[in-house]
Length: 302
Image 1 (cartoon, rainbow, N blue to C red):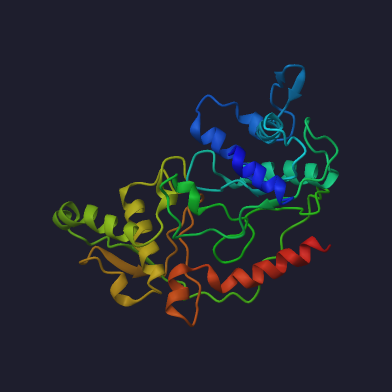
Image 2: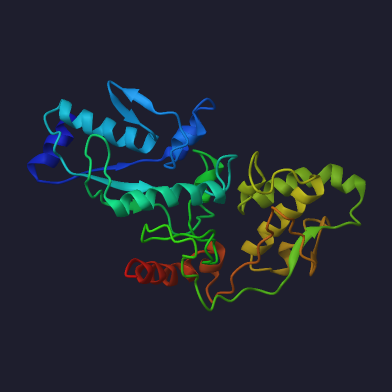
């Protein structure tokens, strides 16, 4: 690491770091919740007379101290990634993401800096634009839910990128998004008990191996449904990734298409985006990515 820092310094390059306060909560059940945010609810941590009220500042200044220890305490630092997921864990929810971004953007707009580098602009990049339903979940199910937009380009929560804290500020949604028909795939109510006992587990595994079922996990938005609800969610997730092909909603007679939305108050059974390319349809995010980037650029200029 010292050699790498020397190389960066020699070439007048910045040090880029990713800071994820969410991971502090995810990795430690005893981590104080409020210390992950910026709204002053946490008990301050006294570091030899320097008071820290949030883990973001503490993480940033830990890097400042490490750089100083090898003779490069003035090296520019860029925050290459910072964000908060909205599903896939009990702490990954839209309300927490809104709280986190609201505090972060206000600080960035005011150029508050950190205790070690006060009153400075910190070049910062948010992660990310849209959810990624094929991303590896090895670190955790939340990895597919970092987007500030849903898979279809609709904002998940209000957000003022100017950092002024305007409560009526919203991100610009993707426009002209076309969806497939209002058809879902659900558990067949007439499936025999014998077939359910023999086939259901394997069919759910197959569906979730080829579609995103991370919202069914502990603490996630669809956690808490009964076995029928879980099966229907898995079948529908697969059915939508297959562009509602008839054969994708059968599962040896365990599933049937339905025009009745099986969504609950907390769990959304999605409908796929209509696209002209099969490869794009399977990913479910590419059709709106360009529109979202344009929308973000428009907002940044307001």
